Length: 238
Image (cartoon, rainbow, N blue to C red; front, top):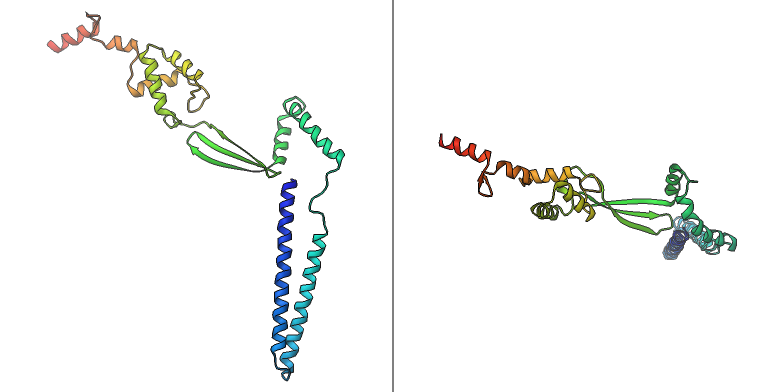
């Protein structure tokens, strides 16, 4: 807040300085016009003299306004007692925020009073950059992961496919794959973890059959004919 007030004070100093310069220039211009007019032309000379007086008056008013503003303190001094109170808040506020004394509604209202604006920028379908500008002029930045509709749009989807295939080829079940990848920090499109159903859907989309379905569709296993193999062979020869 003090930094913002200081910036506003500097802006006003520049504003009043420019006002004085403009008024001085216009007064000087009016003086030159009055000096250059033919005194015999009383009507024009009178008009230019009045204009010069008006410009001089505006110049003096601009100077007085700038001087009055310059006499005001740039910042409000913070009394020692209030400063100590604010320092104490930095120690007492964290437990107050996390405790039961403040309701959810209270926390929301408190945040609204501290935030000047929030700037959002979508970096990817599942990545949003958040910049919070506080009323003090400072800001905080971070990246949040919102839920999305399509698993294929999550960041690192190609790496996810590769990892699922590796675990599947190593003999892991869908549940084991889901637990392993969730422990590695992988998430689904809508949840902070990967579910066995999501793994199953991905395998089906990639046509990666489970061992059970591979055995069911196999013609032979360890050199022995399966029922499916016998049926296929019989129908192909009939």
